[in-house]
Image (cartoon, rainbow, N blue to C red):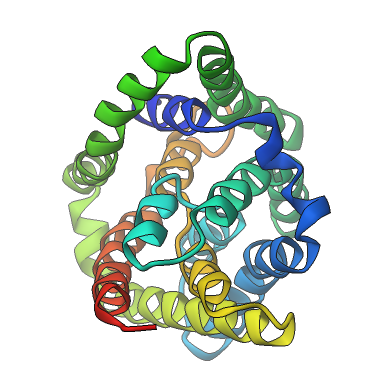
Length: 267
């Protein structure tokens, strides 16, 4: 999926090796955030779908978005919300790498999937473009900064374009399931954000770090979920992308409200 490849390349453009080392200098913040993304989100999806009944395909699609890494634009949202941008960048980088393993394992444990193909797909769609972006950043930092400035402005419109393309092809399924999915996705995002805040309290993080966890846990990589759902190598079923399309819409609405409020907050 070209759009996902570009978004992951853009993420790599702002990453440095030291971003992955933050887990050693600030372990409580990083571990709390990763626990929210990798453990808490799938548990929330499982709990919600036990209360609100959905089809097997919608359950699989919801679990797919829960198992994906943090959104590539989360650092921008974190900056607006006066959070800890360095922590946000590190968490996005770490979750993107860790979920290369956890996503196939979790999805493979719950559903009958070609796990090997899913691993390869993740490596091609995520790790390779991120590695190329990091290489460009290391060798040509000035050019990387200019490219990143352009791609950062395109990230949100491209995500919406990707969602719109899938909406056109699956509009009947989306309209049919929007009421139930809209409710589940909205609750998922709200519970995820609340969970991020609570994890920050338990880990005794400061207010900027807690704001960051709220965004990181509440903002998943919808583009990756959409791309994996439609991939002919793995799922090859665009219906599974429907939850991610609804998630992309609701995520940006809810997170924009949150960051707008935080941007006006005095502390």
